[in-house]
Amino acid sequence: MRFASRENTALAQVEVGSGVHPGGGGTERLPPLVGRGRALEIVLGSNDFDGETAERYGYGQSGAPGQGTGRLRGRTRARRIASFDRRPIAAAKKLINDVSLPTAGSLLDGLTSFTDGADVA
Image (cartoon, rainbow, N blue to C red):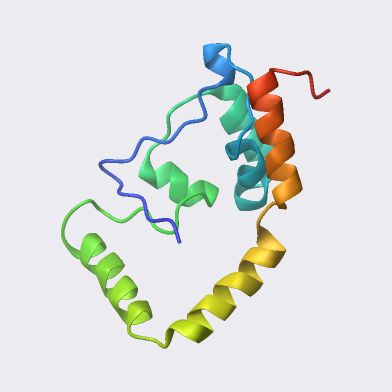
């Protein structure tokens, strides 16, 4: 789960804007989270965006305020989950990861692309 504070979050994929070849995780993980179009906007635009935008884009679970009730809600969720038996938690995470995360090969391709600076077109 990804929680982002509305007041204190600044997320970015700065590689393209910095003249660095992208890859190594972000480019592989973003499209399933935010969709292809948003992923292209984030990666190619190299802009910072806040917790509210992260929530709207699907990058953050909740644009909870940095203090007060939002923080308390996040802690309460974490405590509740932590109180459950660890085996079903691990099984659920594995099953969700198996269908929603990039494969090791895809991540390795991205990392190789990033470290080599190779063209992927």
